[in-house]
Length: 148
Image (cartoon, rainbow, N blue to C red; front, top):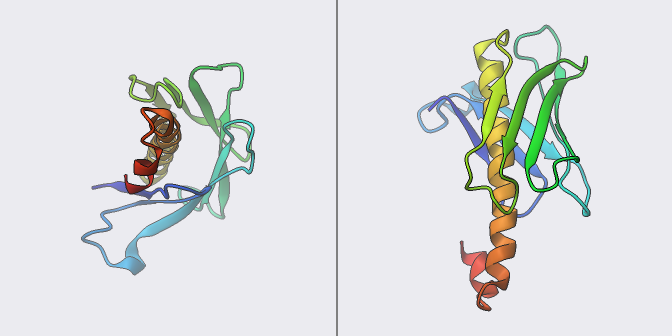
């Protein structure tokens, strides 16, 4: 295991990190917050910060491309506007479809891992939202969604 994410079923706050959290002591793991912007009407941007690879802390934002209505398209940019990652998948209702993830080649290994795990966390979270909505209206079994 090289990276991990803790994704709540409901909420806008995720934890991402690098390392093997099962076999490494808590104080030696790198944990970072991945937060989704507050917005009820559309899927939103996600932000995380880290000091990996640079002196001082930098902020990275996964910005949603709103022109892609039925797909999930995000660009991850640092606080200087440099694109460090790009993600494209089937979107909330087609999240099982294959996607594409591109990461900048000049990143240090740990930062590359954070960019990748943050993209997977966003993809999984949006898939959970779409899956929950579909299941809630599918054959009147909405009460079983909370158990999953």
